[in-house]
Length: 443
Image (cartoon, rainbow, N blue to C red; front, top):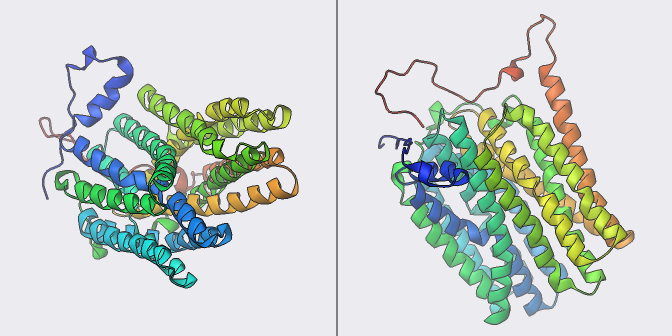
């Protein structure tokens, strides 16, 4: 295993604007820019596949119900398989697992495309799309590399997590737009085909950057499961509630735009929320973290719950899409800080050697919440009104806040002996031994 690249101090950085210096310092690490570009290429299809599948299946079979059922099956399969794929990544290494897992997923997408194109039986669509669940968590693997490269440098790791969250928002903002453009301009299968090519190319480029890859953790050295790690179960419950915010917001916004005769504008309106989150994530990373992540977390959730009231007010009092888009832009500014802090807590609370699995469990919780939020938001929009549907994200964010506060109080409560509970002593794993002068930093 090659030595860990050293994070340079970059004395020449004062020539750059102050907000850019933390990011310039990150990408001066040898290999960081290369693995980031490959990962972004692999991550872009994550926002393309579901939209492409819906357009392709509904256009060919004339049924949105079938298209929705197929994508829901893929979501359920992902919830089951993704943590297992991540466990293999931790055990055998990113390159050895991510490449074959990606090829299996790409074959699933190709199979779906061919089955739709040539009128195969309906069950083949479900089986093909379920195979795409082996897609590795590319965002989690990128965060794992930063955690490895920047270990011991909390400030730089905060900036890296902020960049990754902004990249997530950008990919999920551009992915659906690109998918809709390809499917509408060329042929219905174009989005799925392009997504598969981007995914395979990006993962191959990412996996080729071996110098920055974290070392694998063999089974006999692996510690206990992240699910049983102190502080993780309540954090995953908060992820579930947070995911409901995203799922409900998407469905309710589509229903609201449709009710006002502008359904095609729903994607643009949702893009404002993603844009607000992406910008806030970059600013949050440049400013730097104040205090521990555990202390910041309830405040981030409280800000998200408060700002989500703005779309509810805009939809209820006005009904104008431009005003709703502005409200979503502002509300989105609390999303990235919340998700950045979530991932930092996951990194702190996941046992060493299981980081990919821990972050994938968090993503799985988010996916489960998205599914629940979509169903709940759709029900409220149908049975009450689309404007009332914006109350679902507010309720979900408030639930996440209550869960976070309850968890923080339970772990800070003194034990009978008068000493703090062990969970309060959660810290990222660090090498406690003093580092001799002249030895390269771990970060």
